[in-house]
Length: 103
Image 1 (tube, helix red, strand yellow):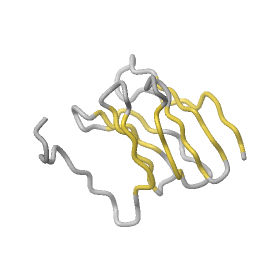
Image 2 (cartoon, rainbow, N blue to C red):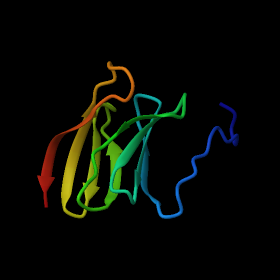
Image 3 (cartoon, helix red, strand yellow):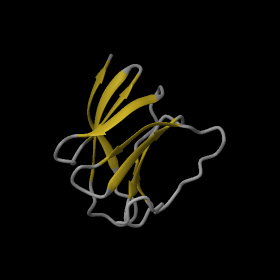
């Protein structure tokens, strides 16, 4: 990669705003949380959506991958969740909530 070069940019609808971004430490995957109350996973080679979490009951305030890069952790006003996905299927892999704690 060339330093300072824009590889891609995404345009969101005016009513949608980013609330958190994080990069997977093990794969070329970006997680982007928005005011739509969900997180989209982007493949950073193709720049396509490769998965989406189900909508939360409140705004996703933070997201981060664990050190191994095989789980996405999200925090909302009222819950903490751990998400995993199966990249073996065709199309978008299912993103599943495997653990959660209601606050």
